[in-house]
Image (cartoon, rainbow, N blue to C red):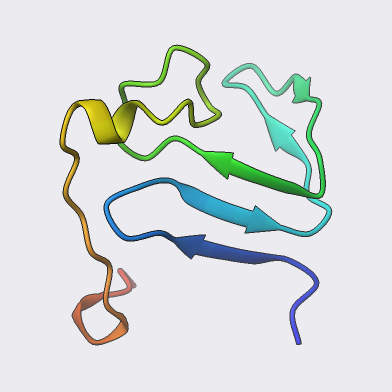
Length: 72
């Protein structure tokens, strides 16, 4: 089993479980916990973390394994 699991929640955030290093665009490390939720809707006031804004803006995204295409 993977040491880190990232799950795209239904109409919500990325749920991250496991020890990861998260960096900003300049490569600076952002403090994290071993379980966190990352914004996927782009509306959070606390990016990159989720603040549940997705429910206020009615964000819709259901990721299904069979619909994901990996760019090569």
